[in-house]
Length: 452
Image (cartoon, one colour):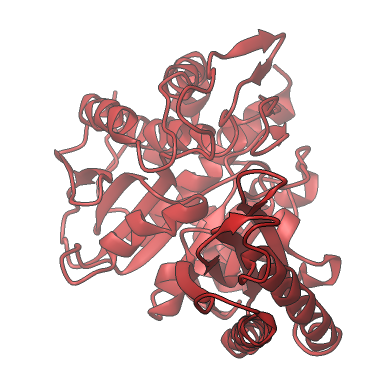
């Protein structure tokens, strides 16, 4: 180990002389942003000094060392959790195991809430504030997917290994390091594995956390994706629909003249795409996509139904609503035209079902939590970059509660693909950053020193 490496592990190396840098990536964030949407913002000296002072705390130095020492255990946790399937809406087994791991790591109390979130509470000295550190339990892969981890050198290959099982391992290691170093915080901390972050899960886990039945949360730190310099402080809002045209169906020749759901679906897609294309050429960035279409039984049968799933996104709620109105108009136009064309039989009907609603929102770069995230990132030797993304932070954003999403470190790729991978390129740096950010937000109780 070089002298510079030792200094970084102990939190003593100034950012100007740091050696570590990484290209960040966030689940549903990097792919969703335009290049110009990455923003660089000045860090207030106040927060830089706060992070530097925190890193000099003997207990924090001890925790930094523990994080490095725990690398083999973090890897074991990572692999163990990855190999527990957590398909959409079926995260129970992984959630139960994660709750057991939170308890073993030192949480004062552990429970699984109504949605299935695994929650470990570590009490603070005052308990006047509650801060969350969480990663999501679920993956995008269907039941039956082979999730056995394959290792090639230091690289792990498996569905969900980077998004977001590495984040779950990070959260556990932060808790273990705090326990080992005897760090007492002023605020209570909730260490959480959330359900339903991906796809049609529609952020149901974090929606439960911020519901009337959830705990009072003052700030929220999500860990998602990989890398160490990205900070998501703006939420990419989205609406997702399943549109289903329904008719009587029949023989292609014998029942010719009946309404045809496929005809209507084709028109709806055409009208929507033409209008949405014009709408998205100017103004705040907005996107749309017809991602899935299906229906019909055979080439010589008039289908009884035809359906599509549509996604629209923007960090501007008004822009999302604008595309939404275009979709609704296109569907009704297509329905009307197909019914006018019929020669016999009942009218075509349409079912419009909202299957995803992620609110847009965000917090200003000058907010204390964002400033602390940038200061902690800079202290670890890499330049922070603010981003927009669709993550669990969308919910606290929409409620005006400070939140950020940060990466779990290392390098990864193939998110949402069967050959997803994660490489431990100084992954401990991201864990140390997460610890610094968490402690800066909770406050460290005075008089605490590193455990002997």
